[in-house]
Length: 159
Image (tube, rainbow, N blue to C red; front, side, top):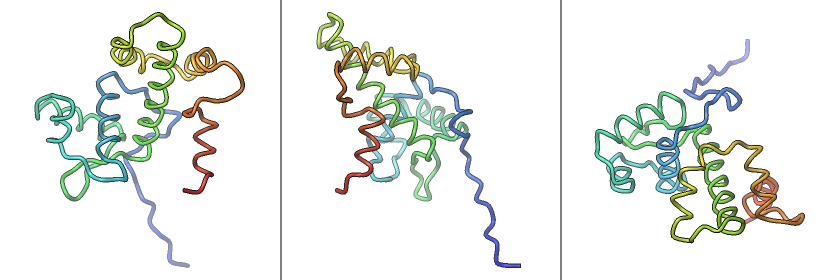
């Protein structure tokens, strides 16, 4: 019998079975994605400073995100996005960009209010509504630079 590699068990829920993160969870996922660019571990203290919350609040949220398979503990006591967490953080970033563009171009909302309004909406927007907002915000056939098509093209483009 050839050497069989043991299956690696990762605390990740399949994409189709995952729930959409809450508004608070979304803030943490986006912060971890931003602070941990390139796979760098993110400390709880860095999250607390960035999000302006207490250490116990961070502890509770990272425990929940880890339980749900969005993040994992690193060996140097930091946190890193899992594949599922990276997927969700990317989707949140894209959805936020689409919502902000829609608010900026279609609705009469002041630029001061766009970020706070987008914060409230980003976790409530379904993939179908995201596509409709994108179409309303970017008329024509050119996809916005954060559309799934543009994401695919960027992956194929050598850097």
